[in-house]
Amino acid sequence: MDFKLNDEQELLRSGLTRFLATRYDLEKSRAAAKTGLGWQPEIWRAFAEELGILGAALPEENGGIGGGPVEMMLIAEALGHALVVEPYVDTAVVAAGLLLRAGGDTATALLEEIVAGTAIVSLAATEPTSGEFWQDVTTSATRDGDSWVLRGQKIVSASTPLASHVLVTARTSGERADAEGISLFLVELGSAATDIELHHYRTVDDRRASDIVFDGLRLPSTALLGAEGGAWPSIALARDEGAAAICAEAVGCMRKVLADTVEYCKQRQQFGQSIGSFQVLQHRMVDMYMEVEQSAAAVLLAVLKLDSDDVTRARAVSAAKATVGRAAQFVGQQAVQLHGGMGMTEELAIGHYFKRLTALQFEFGSTDHHVTRYARLTNR
Image (cartoon, rainbow, N blue to C red; front, side, top):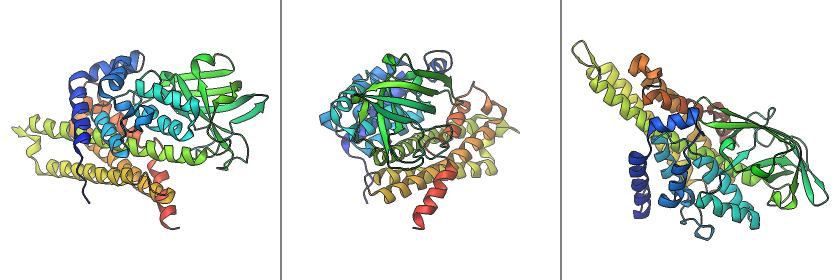
């Protein structure tokens, strides 16, 4: 099988890499994440207007450039390499995929806004009692005339503090933990001032997230996206797309961490010579390299299987997520140890990458969750 990129994909990767190398400053990004807005709006506008990456994986009729999963992988890996905090995966991958499959005037219009960089959309799918099972939905949506009334609670809704809209999973029929009866609703945060409580916070890896309480929030009939009670297949696919995207992001992070570690070991002197000349440390760095390359191969397989049937897709994504989770832990910990005490400080980039690699192990399902899912799907 030929894994070479075509000319358009090479241009996409090289253009984004050059942009991030010259325009995305890590120190400025960390300042925005810690004490500012949590992101850089001017960078997001450049993603849309100068690079066009927000629609790179979307059809041309929706304002995109007609790419697909491979383009998504290239973008996510480049963003991971630069430790970008702007919500590409949450908005341009997960939310955009849900809107694209939902169809309809409301979803189509919002999708165009995402591509243009004028809207940021997040997903609120996890609940206090659901754990890692997104189909365990207790948030309810009931009809009241021409409106829907939303009641319930969502937690750790990534990027919601930055969002203009949030997609909410709610049960319109069926029993708890039943995949049937789950619907998807669009909430415009600027117009939802009452009957909604938002608690924003910064996560360990300097991202932003929210806990949300809906106390009888009234939504128009157009807020329902797609068929009533039939949202789960699209949500399950969106979760796998998000998992594949952050796996690609993790590969980018690990490549940067490995390169910085090798360079540090060349420069750090001990006993009159660089520590990189010590064979035992060379072996460690080779082990780190092997973990990165295994992860990259697993991610490529998962990305190529995103358009396959549900079981094949889920198995490939879980294999990638489990492989990347193990690698992210190993590579991150080895990098910190080889840097010594400085590796845990915020003065070096390594400390920031380590926190992101740690958080990535739990997004869109933990390593243990995906190991279990892979075993279940393999033994069918």
